[in-house]
Length: 317
Length: 310
Image 1: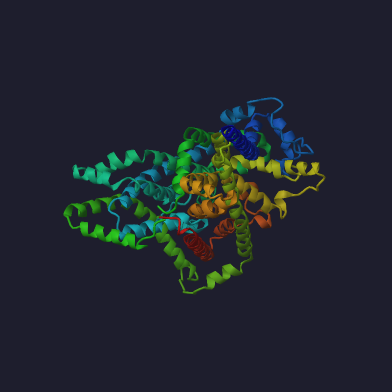
Image 2 (image 1 turned 90 degrees about the horizontal axis):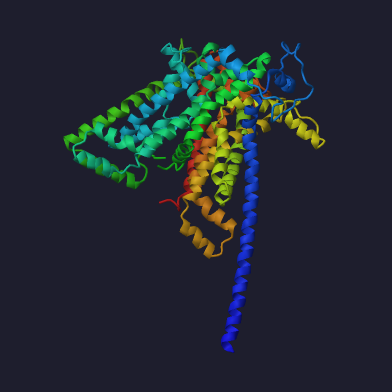
């Protein structure tokens, strides 16, 4: 009899536990559902402008000017165009046409020139900043002393300064060295920018000192330690930094505006906004072409990028 | 960040290193390692440090030729300049609104992604994608959205609201805050996600066992463990908030609507007049303000987060 009662209460207890568990599960489910919906809404908001740019680049010129004529029309060219009263934002073009791309790629080379300008400005900065930074961060990692720590602190301060502050010094130096209006005015400050040095140093200092000491005991010189221990271990970090640098410089607007007064040398990031109203049809196609390199980099190296951003955090290195 | 010679641990470490340095081999290694540092250090010296000294010098003389020492006159004249006042005020209000919003919203997104929702990695990719897209490319769509006859006003019309001239009225500030958030939330979110995942699990488990509410866990544990990340995100957002000039310039050119006139516009327009004294004084003032703000942030973080860090 007694045993029976025990079993009964045990059963009730189990039931109670099950009920509570199911309530908790239900609550958890609701929370996950809400979080997912909110995240989905944000995702749509985040992606929409990008998707729209791409889909709109497949419209024909007349479709674009009838949809957005009013937005881009200026007083001097507006006369002959048909201009819609309203601005119609369309997700999908009425007719998919590649005519804009054909014009950009084959008929009006000026956009491709500007694209090439962007490449010429950005790639050397990324490559040489990484090279300089590799050396410098090795210097900061080996034989740390007070002087090096002070220099590193100066680097950090410089890194945290907004462009408005470093712009005047940049301009003065380029003027003295007669670099204004040449690409060097943008390359040199970019190459010696302290950003990559800071990140790479933080990463390299995590390599156990014992590894380098072991190599030293085995008779390796500084160059061998650098080449065969530090560089292979920092490969991932170098990729991350390269991606971060590429995104940042691909977007540059301030530097060319001030340091390159010759508009022929401007990169596409500046030139795109100056596209005239007669060619708005091309604008979306050019914008999409300009998006391609960073998006490819992103798809190829998203994990590197995330890793790179993560090193940046955890400021007390 | 590493402050030189801060704390006892550092000092003893440095001392013990000094003792070891007696052998000629380490001395040689030291020289060689300094050699690796040299190219970068020279570059930084030539392109950043020296010209900055010159800028400080320029800011206290009346002009580069006669070089009369005028003390604070340049600063005063910049401060009296209406364009500068406007630009400084706009930049300040923008940063004051946009930076806290960026920190809070990205923390929210990070917590959402941490709560084990499906398609996490896809969401991460989506949230990060605005960071990749060049501003120049999406500016076209922003123009379509925020034009007087554009999409946003049509949406408003659905709710029977009046049209707003987004880019040429006091709403312009709202627009640039939105553009700033769009661009920067993903980056901040990644930083918060890594911070959230590095909070020790056992502490969270103990808190659950002690029947702490989710709010208490968030407020007393998670926030304190993330204090250094919050500091970093705030500083980065602050720096990035000065880059919003790019969006405004690409949307509106050199002279946008009054409330969008930023410090960078002021600098650019002063450049075209080649007024070195004014520019130098403005740059110095900005550097000083940045150092003060970052210093305050560091002190606050030190005060709140010191008991959780090893």
